Length: 448
Image (tube, rainbow, N blue to C red; front, top):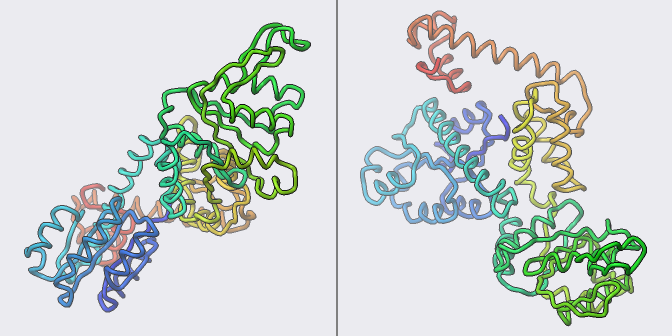
């Protein structure tokens, strides 16, 4: 399983005890809450693919509270357990028909209820894949649904249509260029060029001509006239990454361009008008750099009309499992890998790691793991987040035993024409034990 399956369980405590235990045994990460009011608050801050609502006879008029949950959980698949007769009453009848993947009558059979949740998760996973495929891995190309990322998307939608300069702050590897591209996509310039420039990578001796262009013969090696990067972005967006790396004299020339909207190529005295929007980014605190004289204060104030802060990965750890799965799917799309997903211990290790290199570090670690993994499930050691011990061999043995159990169950069901009672007798286990194992491995009689 590539990511842990999480389920929000909204249930009165007496109803939930056995259910929570059963779900935990089946590998679910359970988030239990006692009522819909608390559930709505949790749904505002965290995304769930699957939620289970259990109502007893003491909650006949909870429909308005459930509608409040629906308004903040548009991605969620709901499964319900209701007292007899409640599902036939209005407004629950309309809510069930319109918003529930499946529903059961209280008290529900735990095995069949867990199967419903598994099928709901499968549907949610298909929807996530469709969404990822259409949006390059997520809204605005940024994978995740955490509150900090949602706030950033909202700010991008507001700032995108404006034509003012934008200053993007964030740690190295946090995704500042993705933000710049999203701003460009949301602007009226979306069909015009987006030109990214890493200011730290420009040669100091050529940085001026690279940005502003040059005329033939203006310096040794200038055998022809050439447009600079600012001209190349004409009508579109120029993204100046790590702008704090620009020399002070180049900063002065850039300031003049922002004020006059004209450039002069090296070796020329002719002014050229250029319509371009500037988006700048830096991992350096530009306020402190301007105060210390390492960055021009007038340029800083000219750039800092609109400002966006990209959250580091450690502040949106909720997004890590989905990000890791997205990188894994991209990395395996064109190649062969032994790995078929992430071991639970790998997911836990990723959630515990502080990610000083942010999304770039996660991308590199997962790519390496896809290539180097020697087991069907990626482990912490493959990600460089743990040391190889005897545990992988033990886990590999456990995986072999699980596969043997699955094979034995399927073979037995086929031998007895899918009769569960006869299959249980053939395997030497009770009928309930066989049902539990079938639910655990998502095996139905007809799928065997």
